[in-house]
Length: 493
Image (cartoon, rainbow, N blue to C red):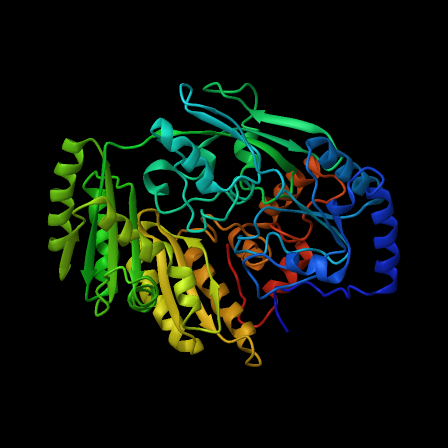
């Protein structure tokens, strides 16, 4: 039995069917008929997010078109004490949008308009259902772009990015979502409209905007986001370095940062990930390498010219067996295409894979990679490593077959061990994917009972009845107590 999957609720349970019929009648009194999905075949596409190992059919799905409709839906659910899970594109990887059998899924898919793009102020005001990449596509005619670029940027939405504080390959230099959002408008569970932040350099009072970003849909439902745009750099150039040893590649990351160079992106892939990506997109990767580093530098022509030579020398001195420099933009994009396609590439070589997300100090990269390899052998499960090496955000991909009895549970346990290793070396259990249900047990390891009580207090201040995405993000004291009592779980703070 899975350690993470909440207890399943049968869609056809008579009690749920009665509740569904009553709620549908209430919602259709103010929503168009096509905005409420109630049949099994209609709600099934919403049964999971990108963490597809865990599934649950929701009570029903609601697709509002206006802010007022969102407010009325939430107020209705608040009065009837119906849980609500907000959903963007469903590309999240931590089970944050996993439905509840007795609750609704509130989809923001129809909120897909760029409301305003100001090239002078370098801002864009968008609805939450706008795709990440669509913002850059709209801004490019003004020589601007939106910096956070998750691997799923072609599909993921800005509302989901806000919920998970998403990053991407360029977050080392340009930051995560929290560093690139100026304001958010959201609706509370009680139907109240709230704006946090502003287009000014600062906003009065507590920095609730930073608190809200990354709150995983547990504090409110986002209905509008104002992001800042950056000028497209004069020049961008990438290097690809091959290594015959994974630990050497890990050490090279620290050497680059120690030299005072902050690349736009600094990514690493190990042998299994290299082979999978090359077979999938033919990026020209050296498949005999134990690891590759991808380093992109951007800025003025002079700045990039100087840093390219400096980084090349550092890579060779660190033991790289080969260093390539992109000769044009097409080659630079091809370098990155393999990295950005790594997740689907791994999906081609394994029936299932489990994408982890933990962050460690850069100095710990060699140790963590070595110990991850040891854990991989201990559990007899292959692990492909793909990660944002520059800021220590790791994405181990555990390859498994969910059809084999017990293999999902073994995969969960291995994933938990890797996350707890991140905490052990001074890191954290997540960098950009969020906690959701995937890492909820490891929250008990990273945080003390006192800290977890404070997290619950924040949740209660925004959502006193705990109806917004309940059961996610922050574990209950009982869950932590039970987790710590499991065999081989003698945790210490």
